[in-house]
Length: 379
Image 1 (tube, one colour):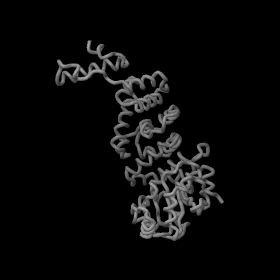
Image 2 (cartoon, one colour):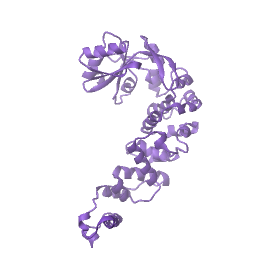
Image 3 (tube, one colour):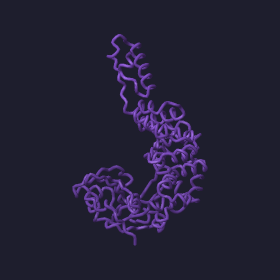
Image 4 (cartoon, helix red, strand yellow):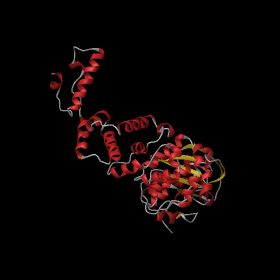
């Protein structure tokens, strides 16, 4: 028997939520169990129960907890306790799927609920005291071996929801043994199901790609997606080559999916992945500047230190020459620099002439690596 030993099991809010379900069977499930066994941080607590949605609401409110019907039709209620949100879902089995959505029926069989999930490592359950249950019989072994596999027939799992193609690669990047190789049956099923990706919303695809590119080293998985034709289906013209070089240069830089997306390239990524306005703007900046020659200090002055470092690292991936310490120092100086001239310093100029002179002086100041003083510029 395997037992889960995680701090969140004894969180007062989690204990209160779980105990409210005592009249019915209840289990922790999915990511919190998986990541808890791996001693990874757990943010989302998912609980499944035999209780029907209305009963979940009544039980939570009876215990003085806040219940939010976030997915009532699919049996999901969010219960907030101790400042923590817990997603509680009635045990389910699939009646009908169309590649995007499922019509479900409630059940009291844990095995039915486990059989409808995507990967073996995601179909692990835990009792109130941490005893781990593996209804499919292979999840614990696969987690220990760092192996990502579909439950049952991979083609059937993908046909239920084509987003599972992207989830397969995302989970491989985050959980699989890099030396173990990708599951051959799963990869073949993903390649065979490429046409189904067109059914997915851009928002769902974009969210999965962001999560994948946030993995410690997504480059090998992206290369496999390219080889299987999946990357081209998502982003025509994209390539894994620059990303592979980029991740070799990132060092201690925090994972940044937009920096990595810029390295992948491809046609209209902001539209195809439905990026937020801020992410689309940042991506456009990276793609424009990574092939240009603006000085490190100027980059940081105009766009901030983080963006400058990202751009310099992207350039390094293209040229094969990583940014040197002098470039990074220049960027730090540029990020802290403040242009010493104000409009009030040029009282003899107005309108467009004033703007043009301010711009010209700022250009001279940046070219001097921010060394020219106010008096130098006004002389």
